[in-house]
Amino acid sequence: MNTEYLKELGIIKGDEMILNMGPQHPSTHGVLRLKIHTDGEIISFIEPHLGYLHRCFEKHCENLSYEQCIPYTDRCDYLAAMHMNHGFVMGVEKLMGIELPERVEYIRIIIAELQRIASHLMAVGTFGLDVGGITPFTWCFRDRERVLDLFEYLCGARLLYNYMWVGGVSHDLPKDFIKRTTEFLDYFETQIPEYNQILTGNKIFIERTADVGVIPADVALNYGLTGPNLRASGHSYDLRKEEPYSIYDRFDFDVVVGEGTHGTLGDCWDRYYVRILEMYESIKIIRQAMADIPNGDVHEAIPKKVKPPKGDIYTRYESARGELGFYIKSNGKNIPSRVKMRSPAFASLSALNEMAEGWMMSDVITILGSLDIVLGEIDR
Amino acid sequence: MDFNNIKKLLSTNHGEAISVLEDTEIILVPAEKWSEVAKDLKENKDLTFDYLSCITGYDNGAGKSIGVAYNFYSMAKKHSLEIRIEVDRENPEVPSVEKIWRTADWMEREVYDLYGVSFKDHWDLRRILLPSDWDGFPLRKDYKEPDYYNGMPVPKDKSYWE
Image 1 (cartoon, rainbow over the protein chains, first blue to last red):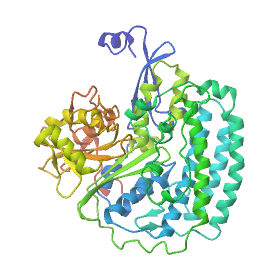
Image 2: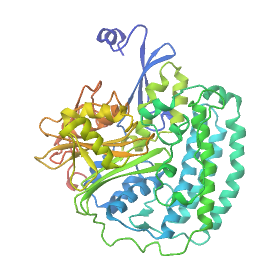
Image 3: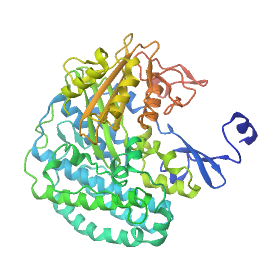
Image 4: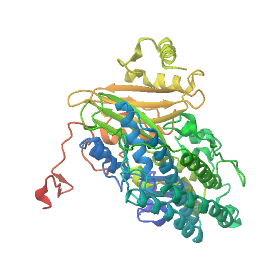
């Protein structure tokens, strides 16, 4: 790029240069382009360019019936597709006033928490990869694979499920699913200490992540950060506790918050470690849900026609990346008049400039990795 | 604080500008009053809406108004609120709240991108999801897909690919 020209325009100052990262870059976790203004190694400004994966989700929804929208929500956050399904159908159910059978609620909770484990494993693994550790990545993938196997056993799909339907779920739990899940949890609980050995307490890892990309709780909140990213800054906010949807109020679990163990509160290490601890909480919830899951018909409450009455609803859902919102406007037809998705990663990414300013090039990768973004959900 | 108290408080502070959408718990605010009300929402000790959850653009149909819906939540007071602003579709202009809640920065850009609502005093109002050379605002109900995009024909029915 012509530096002199950019200087004349006042786009860059002094000895700055503009460096492009992405859209084809392995550590941008998808097709994200970052226009980085640097002075030597020091970042002065980051301008993310989005939209490379824009698939017009919201426009599509205005031309599809509610049932047909569900597979599209899968493809938004392909790493936590069950959460997307769940968030969307919850909105439609609220709009229609559907009472769900107990069994469906329990199944949904079990599946959503398994999905949270799978998604956090991906986040932790790729974060390790970003800061230079390849082994934890393969370990995380090995264990995530077991969750995906469970999902495959459950509904036939490994990544994009279309499992949660309005008023129910597509399949009841297959035979032995509870047994297999228990086996997985027993195995998985012994694995988390191994991650702690290889990553959490690793001196190189701590050097790379502690004190880097600190965001205080009030700034994080102002930028709309939610989920693990906000909790890592010490703000105890989890929709599962705050506004318990589904049947989360029946389970006993803790909201994990960052403590600034190895540096300042709200640094990359905290964001990483919150995810590790949340996996323990998910295990707790799954075990409780599996212990008292009732019998019943999972297709009982599925309506013949999904035709919500006229009205609007905004539902919030705690997905693996934060607060997922669905704003659904219905005009009484079987096709929504407007579906808006409030994407948690979109808000997280908007804070990137705030967090990365003044840090080195290599730290941008760390900070971006710690935010756990999924471009499918940002671009929709 | 429940909805009625919030409404009462806002009406005492801002007079007749505040109205409630029929049969709902949604407050309508005229665009010219919005920056004042927004500041109050954030700074009033009884409201403290410190978290702006979502900004949604919507279209009431061809020839009707364009709306923007704001969903707030207060972490401190544990209450939520939805506010709507409806503006003329020919010249939709809403004051920006990007300086009050930083998260509004990108969310407003998204609404601008898809609905063409121009947010007054926004520091960097550009398209965010669509390419910068895109024509028109695709989520408007009267949007017609162009025949050509940068000289390339836009496939519209099966005859293009079958």
